[in-house]
Image 1 (tube, rainbow, N blue to C red):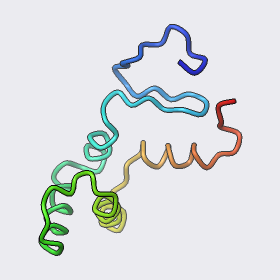
Image 2 (image 1 turned 90 degrees about the vertical axis):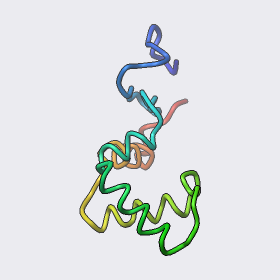
Image 3 (image 1 turned 135 degrees about the vertical axis):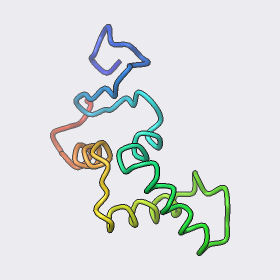
Length: 95
């Protein structure tokens, strides 16, 4: 697994390595818990009322709008910030 021989392919915690991250759960659940389940639900309901659409959990624009509301309210996801920083780091790649 990307130079980490012997690592559990289903880790109990998120596994960070040079050029990769392996979530212990799905990234959506982790981000929601870091922002706060209650706050996340509030942002989703607010947008659902504006867009009058349900079932947008996998809609990229909907997720971006929810994350924007969270960001503007000062709510951050540490793992999402870290993965973005890691992606933008040119020394952090898998050869």
